[in-house]
Length: 223
Image (tube, rainbow, N blue to C red; front, top):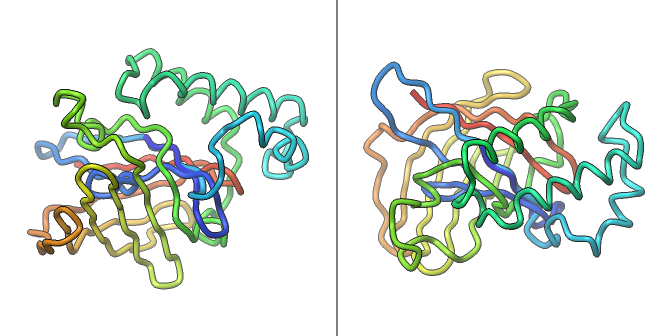
């Protein structure tokens, strides 16, 4: 699971590409792995009180929800993820609580047809252990911003790590329905310089369960 925000048309974003926003986990056959990610558009201050007034006036994406409840939801979400180091410090209870908060307002329809999806998103929160590298000492984990860029017109996506590793991964997207795409990684780039062709095992599916001008929430599925 990941939470992100975007960069061009969006300003808040979650990314997990290769270790960034389209994060795919590798597992034993027949074991289904569901990874959650939350993003916001790149240039937007993620879930910050300084933009609460803007949120207060943008409630159409929560159809059926009052302005007060929308504001309360985003404030609670912010408080939930702020101390968790993008999810690295999240307990199973934290993960379940955040998932429930997001699923409670899941009202997006046909997100793959929305122009809101295009752009560069910053990773705010994820349950991906491969992305967070939680088994490593903290000084060996990614500690710069992580982005995911998506272009629905060309059906391409890119995961981008910043400091200290600068790794990247690019992938083709194949729509399966209006909410889910198959993801096939084709190239990885180590330290932003060394290109490596994907061996073919880097694939999975991505389901977008929430999308608006400020947040994108997705579940990545691999088996």
